[in-house]
Image (cartoon, rainbow, N blue to C red; front, side):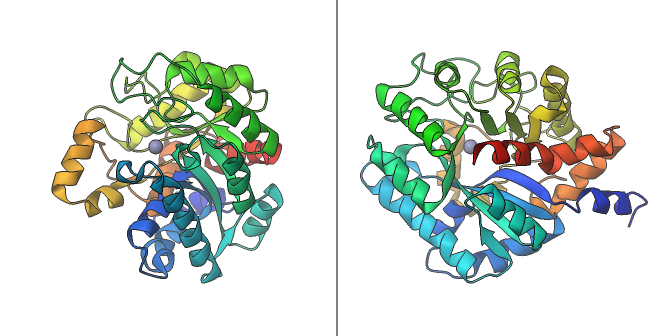
Length: 343
Ligand SMILES: [Zn+2]
């Protein structure tokens, strides 16, 4: 107990929203088990006062191709089975659902997709995923697919090409259906194309400022400004705050928040923790090394490594001089605004 604890508890009363969590992948890895959320995650969610999580369908490299759709559907089924067996959780399809989950004190899960690979090049499938509850879509991970190309984990060298014609149709269809467009991971040309094709607020569910970690997977000051002009929100990522382990600190995480707020105002900042140390820990060493060689070696923040640590962030925001209204916007208010406008 510290003297700030009652203050933190008050700020957390409305809950914390994290728009990127790779929960479906973990469920897929353990697809023969049940009650995974209850046994593995629920205590952390509750300790962090989590109100809503964007849970991302993600297909690993070895399942790309025709298998990607089956794997994605499997992940959706696993999320829904977990929710069916756990009254603490609620599947959210609308802003009204999100509000209901919060008023009932349940943890809402919002289905998102990281990389359009499950769709292949079939535009009709996006409607099917919408029917299944998909409400946010990022076109790419760090790969190229039928829609677009991802930004690589280096300062330059990503594909110079933007969206394909399928990618452009997909973006229009998402906007028409009411699926949020998420610009996390996409390369610079694709980022510009999505902005040009759309009018609604755009989000970046989980990213960091290139100012502190200069890789094309992160976002530049100009890109941050575009998101701000569009009334969107950038979720600050907890695993790419710095290229060095030494600077991967909670203060540096808050530096990213401050940097974005200085450029576009506090209304443009949210949380996209992307906690994934537990996933990396489960990989065989050789597989993990291959992945780190291909992408990057994340530097985890000791005091911000899973959802139970959310109060550490709030404490740090108070210590760094953020006022209550601004902290509540970062923790949930900005995401709620965009979700209300878009869903
Ligand atoms: Zn990601």
